[in-house]
Image (tube, rainbow over all chains, first blue to last red; front, top):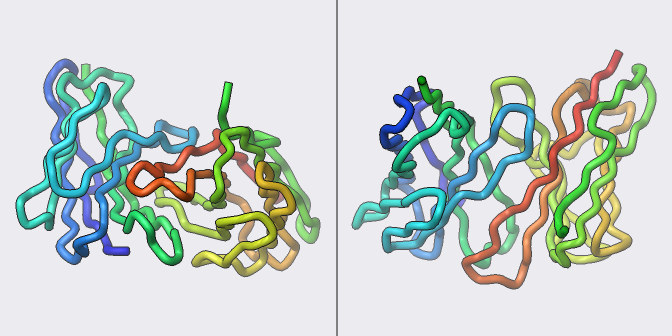
Length: 112
Length: 115
């Protein structure tokens, strides 16, 4: 599975959009981009995933660049409850090992 | 409701003792995982299992053991051979056969402290 790079921390004002970047320059053609978040001392929660096209669900939007070497998770109207560590990972849909490797993520702090 | 249940939530252990962390899921998921998380760090994979009676080592398997006798259960034993066992342990599962919807579902974690 390809490696990802994320900034260690970001701030966002409550009610504004939070844009969290992720670099995955070595991503392979069959690897998906997944986003999870972890609120302090809880288990991570799935947010969204995508392959090539931009995706949107009730939680967030995922924008993947045309060359697929980077992506951005967008929380359109951040609330205080969105304060968490956000993990970007890439993995093949049918990976031989099914190992899912998490990095250190981005700590998003939503400010009132 | 379907989900993953980890127990205990908090556990204290004396040095030299083995301890077993429970992980049960009723999601009918095929694959199950154990991760370890240290303060300020990401998740590191200990063991994972794709089917019953089969499991593979992750990146930091030394000092740990697992079993997968039932689809819904994947207990983790932290043995006395684990030199630095104090950590937050997370269990997860996913539906193996799904092509692109096999997201991980996590439990709430077990925090182990060695005294």
